[in-house]
Image (cartoon, rainbow, N blue to C red; front, side, top):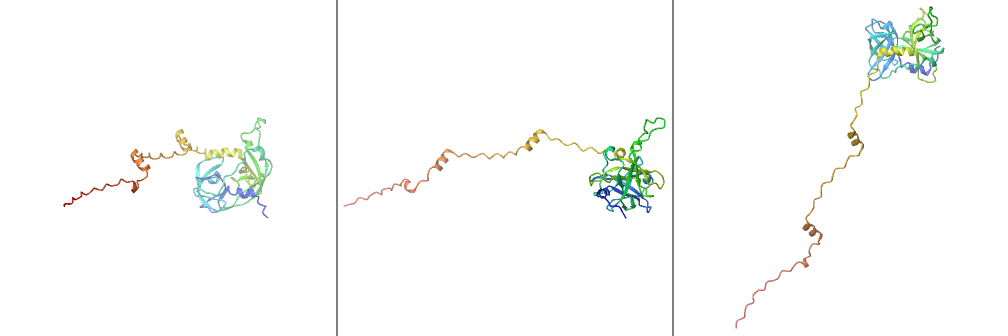
Length: 276
């Protein structure tokens, strides 16, 4: 009987991928999404699996497969793979600090079941820190020993290297990764050594590199900004043509009536004298 899958595990599946060899059947490992945006999808995988392989592929949670190319740089047992942009995957959400969540508690891992599928596997943090002291000076810690913890998981011989360790109960449906499985304690052991999220983020930063700075915003001159803020001026009205005084007087007066026109004088015809 399979354990009940929490909602946080459903969301975490969007962050986990299966890295496989396209030329060798049944050869695969766990990876996860480090960068997911509109310009690139970058996947982190263990260097022990990627090294020397030229035909790598990545299978996302929705079954979409993409060819992958390994980057030149590798650090801390991990390397970076570049793939075709996948718009539905999500980046892993890492724990901010070790003090609050990294304690003996229930966790889960999503190991690969096949080159195209992962499954939910409960786990448990048994030792929250591997702080060890030097034999010569028991008051001095071994270098970076506090950056690792132990996880118990009934995965048998399944290779879990590169699998993020997610917290089961964080008060939210959003999954949070406490670290990444680094190695097995011994062959067929149920105990895995994991690296803390705080320390792994430093490794991830060196693999991915700093984010490119955003281009500076072009500043507009003060005069242009004032013109934009103000309403546009209304266009000037055309000048009114002035009429002459005589024309205005003629227009203001009423037109003459026919009776007021001067009467034309009739010429008198010369009278003829009567002759007797």
